[in-house]
Amino acid sequence: MPTPLELAQQLQVAFGDLVAVLPVFRDEVSVVVQSPERIAEVCAFAKSRLGFDVLLDLSSVDQYGDDPRWVLVYELYGLSHGSHLRLKTFVTEEKSELPTVSTVWRTANWHEREVFDMMGIRFQGHPDLRRILMWDGYPYFPLRKDFPLSGKPSEMPEVAFTRPAPLEGGPFVTVAGARDTIVREPRARPSEG
Image (cartoon, rainbow, N blue to C red):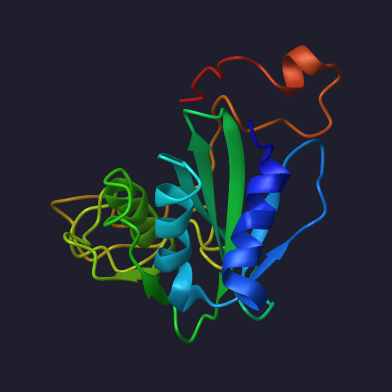
């Protein structure tokens, strides 16, 4: 059975300079696809010729302040050989668009919608590119690094908040300077009102 590194090298042989295999880190193999416009072609080859029949996840990283701003990360898995492979591609903020891979893996439909909804990255050829978590008409992209943690006011008073919601506490908000971990990071924070 081929190893993930051998499969990544086969991808590199097939696509030449378009694909760069990164150094193996903690037994995980990552590949950079140099041209985001060809991501669907590379993914189709990975599925049909290398046996990566499952798209486990598609995520995006905001490298705010860097160019290109967006990193898209495709986590692939092959059921027949049990190998995992990570594909990365970089997209500029000006473009903020690349081809859909929903024609390769149907599950990409939902993953791409989430990336669009949270980051504003568009996918050419997507069959139903609309918001999946935020409401229709919401003008912002909440996972971008330039989006404030407290949120932004919306212009839809009957649909959602109309003012920023400050971080008033919750299971993931710590209390700075508390005497111990139990006080600093409780499992549930009682309401103060």
